[in-house]
Every structure is written in C-alpha cells, then in structure tokens.
Image 1 (cartoon, rainbow, N blue to C red):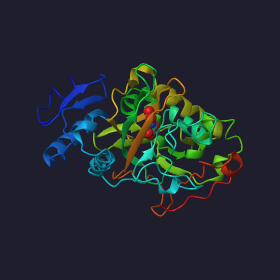
Image 2 (image 1 turned 90 degrees about the vertical axis):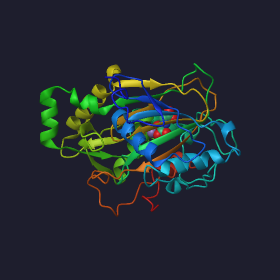
Image 3 (image 1 turned 120 degrees about the vertical axis):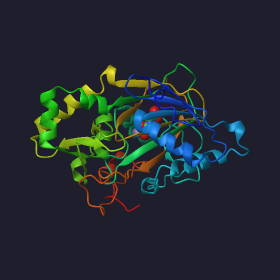
Image 4 (image 1 turned 180 degrees about the horizontal axis):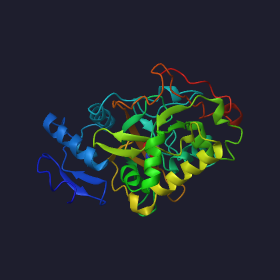
Length: 344
Ligand code: OGA
Ligand code: MN
C-alpha cells in the first residue's frame, strides 16, 4: 500500500511516496510558525516509515528577515533532539559563514561567497560526500537525523541531486546465508573520517594514515528502533570489520556496499528550490552528493541530530572525544598530523 495512504493519522501535511520501499515528499507543513506538537508527532511517525523525507520549501518571502531562515532551520531541527555542532572543525583559522555552530557547511561556497577552487583542500575534502555514507558514523556518538537545506542551487538539470540507499530493505534482501552469517557474527565496524576522505581523494591524502587515529566502533547489523526492522550500518567511513583479516574485511565491506547501493535500493532526489529541506535517518539510509557541472555554486547547510537510540554510542565509551579534522587552510603535510580528537 502506498506510504501514507493507510495512515489517515497524518494531520497537517501530505505524504507522497517517491519509491516503493522508502522516501516520501512531505508537503503542506507551514514553516512560518512553530509546528504544533500533534503535527510534529505525526511527522516523526511518517519519517520512521519512510526514512527520507523531502520537507518542502521554507519560502524566503514568507519570512521577514533573511536571517530568520537559519533560525527556523536550527529551531525546527532541535525538535528532533540534541544537535551536533561544528566547533571541532573550526581549526586552522576556518571561519563560519553564518552565526550558527549547529549548521554544517555541506556546499562549495567559501566565506567570501565564492565557489571553492576544485583543487583546494576543501574541495578535495568534500569529495568524500560523493561516496555513499552515513553522517557521523566516525563519531563515538552517531547521528540519527540529518536535515539538509538548499540555499543556492546549480541551475536545473546540471546535476547536484542527493542520492539515497535503503539499508533496511538491502539487509532484508541479502541472500539468507549471508544474512544469518552477519547476525550470528554480530560484527563491529571501525569507522574513520580520515579513511573516507582518503578513499575519495587518494592522491591529495596520500600522506594521511587513517590508522594513526582512533576509530569509532558501531555494530554492522542493527535493529532500527523507530521501525523495528533490521538495518545494515555501513558507509564509506567503514575502514574495517573488527576481528577479520584485512582482505576478508575489505571483501565483505565491498560486497555489502555494492549490494546496498544497487539501483533497486536507491533513489536520486533532485533539489527544486532554494529553501527546500531533505531530512534523512542515518541509521536507516546511506546518502551521497551527486555530481554537478563544475563552477556553479551549491550552498547547502545541514543540521545533524545526535542519535538517542540504545545503539547511539555503539561500542564507544561515552567519554571518547569526537574526531576533529584540521583541514581547511592547512597544506597536505599538516593533515597527516592533524590534531588528535578535540573536545566539543
Ligand atoms: C551531507 C551530504 C549531500 C549533498 O550534507 O551530509 O552528504 O547532496 N550532503 O550535499
Ligand atoms: Mn553526508
């Protein structure tokens, strides 16, 4: 049955499915005022079902001052839980382009409003976003929801979609012996931001050794608590599976990533208008930034909600510090000796 139609309980918005197993466009929410509690509870229920939601535009014209938009993005996000912030990335003189530490800069625009040079450290670092991943699996406390908002988009039909993969259906449809083997072994993945940056830009990060840094440990197969279904929790950040010889670990991670990102488990969502937001649940989907024609600015800002499920910290001690990454403005040479994780 199409997502949403069996649930007349969803009040205050409409749900239009985008794919047979996940993804929906949610329209009709009024972002010009606080969303009533009852509507918000319905929204959480709808999201638990669909895992990614396109929330529609926060229209600039509906707000009196342009700086109200980040406020409402951040305030809306706070309803979902405690927010992560970017303080630990603010090293080597990198400046924020706006007043909110809760906004992660996922675009290609620098603090002067210029499109970043593709050869720059920041562009090299951003390449990692083009590989399927989940946000924050490299942190001791992982992320549940990410809420990404478009501020400036490349012209229509030049690319720049965001693609998603349904890791819940992918797990359910693994060959039965593989599924049983994964459940029985209860593997732990070791995740590293340094690793995924290096996979995406090997030449630029050739001197970076991901094993010189602490990795974050999260179970590979998990119960997705909001839906009660099992999900694969992997990503390009997954450097290895603990307890397996490296070659076996590499092969298993590759098999699982290839399986989960087949066309039938993925959806590519085009951004329509500046102000549109897409919300996804990092514990049930992977995502990646699609390619787009070079030279255009694409200004995207994201809030990231700390997971509150029983698996939020994985096997990491709660006093483990999150990874910092002294990158922007720093030459390659300093990256291999990026500071140890810093407190946030
Ligand atoms: C992110 C991300 C993808 C995109 O913000 O976490 O991966 O399409 N973004 O910009
Ligand atoms: Mn991401």
